[in-house]
Image 1 (cartoon, helix red, strand yellow):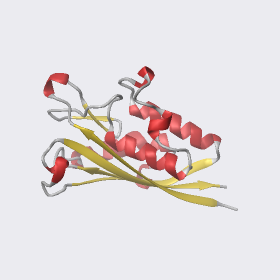
Image 2 (cartoon, one colour):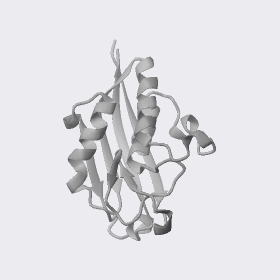
Image 3 (spheres, rainbow, N blue to C red):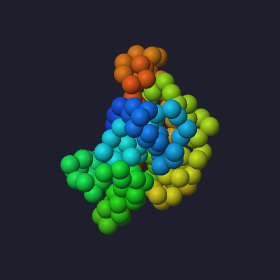
Image 4 (cartoon, helix red, strand yellow):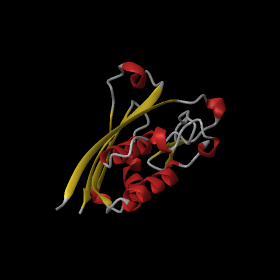
Length: 163
């Protein structure tokens, strides 16, 4: 019998101040922008939403349980490396990713020029071809904290399969 599970994830990070000098990391890629995101790790809002979706689909909690912001070991952590750990946990339990869809929510930056780079960076970490990882963005029509340029949010949906 084959088991299928759907998971969804959501994450939010505020923009760091320019003085903090943080790079903007999205889907494991450094994206040119005047400010990065603030957080305990590299604050890759898209990968955080993706990891929450993966963990949720497998019934393994959330990234806060696996990588708490109270643990100094994760200070400044590369979220792509954390994703590799999540994928190891899923693999040990017999899960594989069928497909994933990740959406950035914010007015800027525009991710169109970086979309394929993002897919090429993350798809292999998921064990997928890049056509099975969708990366997109939307604005909030200048409403709310993302509309005011205070930060970014992301949503992700994944489908897992276990035989």
